[in-house]
Image (cartoon, rainbow, N blue to C red; front, side, top):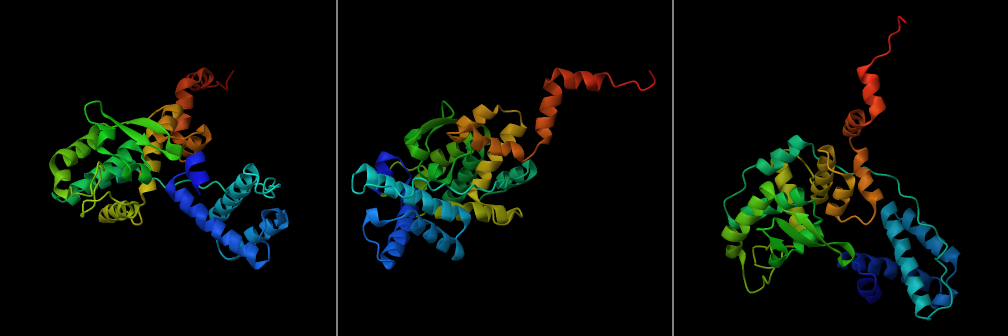
Length: 298
């Protein structure tokens, strides 16, 4: 697991998930009497993946298990613990394109404009939701924020994303206001000897957990009639609303911390009306045809 954490810069959540995947894999091999890496053959791996699917694991979980197995055998080969990598030629299953859930602008405004309690926890929750939507952060990025990463004067947040990659994200408007008020007026009420530099604290003064953020967002959504609201939905909504508002897709890619533009392009599939309007306003032939309709009498 150290290979994933230090050599590849994988997040702690990825390392934990891969660990569980590999425990299942090794156990399955042992049940078949296979205990040496060089004794593993491709059919054994395929059989294990088929078993996971039959057991009801989601396609994404099966794909992650294969990625873990590939990494495991690649590591064994690099370290000369084994002489073959039986999973190398196994293709990753093609993902079915699933469009992410997004809020309408009206729903987003209702969520953010709801009254939050004038308590330390209430104003922390307000700031969390404002920053998730206003900055498009992942939950792990939000929970990992330290006070030193927030520059209220420069209106930016320094975020550590996947693979320990750092990026600067604008912190403006209502997100800036909510976070500034929480830091100046309310965070101090939650601080304890356990707080360290964490921006968002739980009621015991420790760094807030991902699970707590999930609960905060779900609860706030329920108040305004949005059931099952997930923090990632706020990130998806941030990206979609930025593109609908005319932001360049490369800028949105940078703000989200996507390594590939293809990941960001998924959001252009959510609402094609703004793409059509952009085409009509920018393409010279589209304008000409609209301005000079065909005369059928000639």
